[in-house]
Length: 202
Image 1 (cartoon, rainbow, N blue to C red):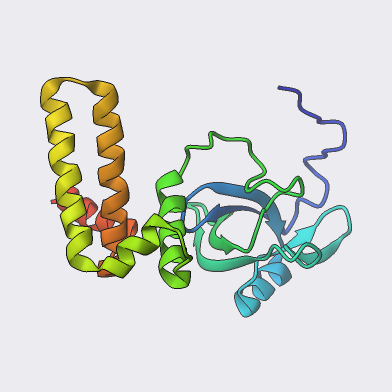
Image 2: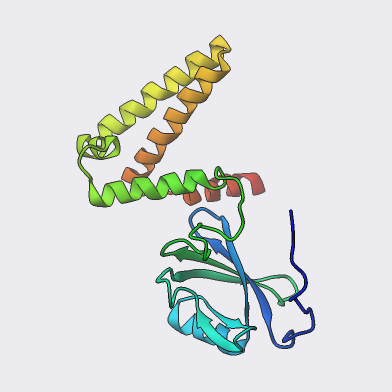
């Protein structure tokens, strides 16, 4: 890993700026880091689009104003010292100038269940021909529930037989069909997490 420190001055333009971490609200993947002054923060709140203060240009810039890849604010959180901001947002496209989803090359598996959930939601909305997910939505709730049951039984069979590789395959099938059933029921992974968290707190 090679890092460039030569052009970064910790004291330059530091006064009045907050570091801002932007996170994908669906996948929870960290997308980028930027800085805001009070004016940029106010514009972000007003427009619902993440707006930073550019230290190099000494001006405000709304992420996506050139590329069209805007970041739509979902929620904003201050840290415990109120000197750093976390923004959860929905990106319109790649966040990084390289055309990648994130400015960090983290593992592709990170947050994939949320990405898969988004794909299933898009299939439900658009119903593209030839898609197996479309087929399930066309068949309806009973078929979806039946598939979840079938995959659950197959997962149990592979677990009790001790076949790890086949278990992974069947458990993956089970998760996919459960996500489809969730979409049909209007339930998200976040809903399930909240339920499990409430039980954990008890």
